Image (cartoon, rainbow, N blue to C red; front, side, top):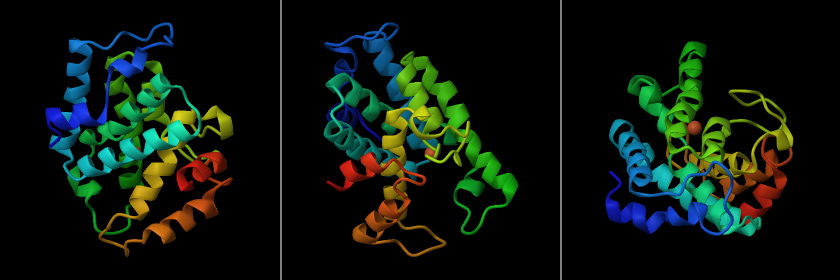
Length: 208
Ligand SMILES: [Fe+2]
């Protein structure tokens, strides 16, 4: 489970609003921080297998966002969203999440609900960009993703970043139903998907 030190090391809420402020973005404070920690703890407790995944995706998303030239508050928002991108999985049955084999269409639909439910939970942070990243991190460039079938730049940049890093981490992590890919093999898959399902500029920044 994520502890206090871990959160402080990973993520600095002050950066969310420091300097360039956006209308409607609250200044992080104790109450805001408590809400964020509540979401991280809920995910780590209910879906323990995702804790390491979310930490890795947050750290890599921060690097990629920086390489793409986002300003520091925007980088912090991407990192924060990545940290809790799968929080909606707390409503999905562990039997489905951990199923060692192909999913039925009903089970797949159940898993897909995690983005909509996650966005509802994350809305309590009152940072629209973070909510949008959580909702749209499974959208795909050609419109084949979910929940809204957004295409290209209709998909928020932060969500395109998390999509790339999330995909890599999934490919390079052990799964019960397939062999784990080596880092070069996983990167090769991303590069094959660049321009089709994944943003090519984001893939290039990830690979840099
Ligand atoms: Fe997800």
